[in-house]
Length: 514
Image 1 (cartoon, helix red, strand yellow):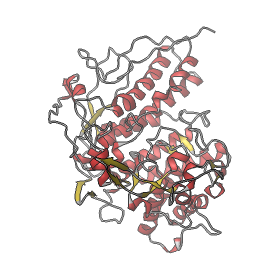
Image 2: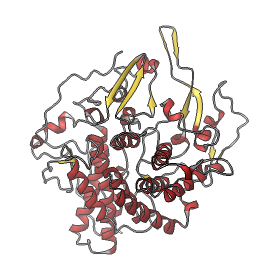
Image 3: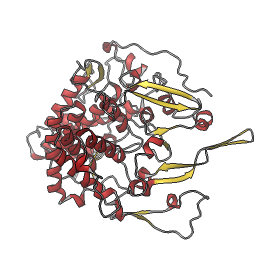
């Protein structure tokens, strides 16, 4: 069989080429598939899943906008200085907007959103050019490409722009929804939040030809597409459609996987392999240096049993969790805290012969001991199902969903939520949202998106209209419904797309104090 060589993209995939105003998409070769099967290699490219709201060191500055992480005074003074390679994390923590230097490339734009969508657009276009759109495989490839494209644009739009609000016009222009792979085609205008979410919806509804099962969850299955539709309607606050797709996604998942035990790990069966030679510093957790043993050999793989739709997650095990995050857990029976809430020596620096030491701190090691997922997991789907039921006042069903997950996450003979049947709608919904926060990766964009969407639940206990971070006696605050929870497009992309009508930001970028 003739070998097909794919030479697709230069680094800096989506900056833009000048005269034709492309999104920095600079092909150096042409994909010439002989048959539709050759396009599977494009869908399997890691560029379709990586670097959404991630930096070059696999962290996420966007997470520092929220309430899951904290920075210490010593880190401010000696770590996050002007020479730190990811000073945008500190900028986000103190709400120094824009968070990224506007003259520099943006990793999440160039290597995340628009690298992924360029590859996915290529699949759609080439299936059509091969006249294979009506073949079984062609339909599957297009469906999977459209599902992946929809996810990238959904998170891109909600990150760069405000949260969708059904009570408003949603007319702020955010990012372009490019659907062609041709470098000869000009970029479209910036989509508004409403336009973007409508296009995401159309792509996902057009992706329901995805197969029931997939070899790897980086490519969408039909249950995953329903899960993504549930997520879309969650952000759009359409609880009825959210419920319909969460229920359908869960039903199809059970059928495809053969039951819930094949979809969620029972953390009660996890343990650390002893090592008699381990000698951790006094007061720290020996588990940090031990191997976590699960119920299979896939817990550190991207295709582990909980992965429904895989997208690479930023790591956060080396960051300080906030006290508020750690206090979410019942530290005596929650297996997530017991396994992953580990103590180790914190940040320390010796300057001029003087040691500045944070001492022993509690870290959250879940994304170190297991593979995290910024896409969708089966627990995510179950909790969306629970939330939708609670929003629709189907409290018995919502409680059943919540208690099902708790069986896999808590110790004891009775893992059900205490007095669950006696809770009001708001009380039960609040418990479901807390469980959702416990399940999410600590340091990705996902919690911040929840802060943005839950800010629309005016007057509810889980609604936060402002986030504050206190650092060395000074408090930094930002309103959730403000520019501080949105991002700016960088100057190089603005210059190469004058039709967008955006102005460059030439303010000196000086976020650090030291």
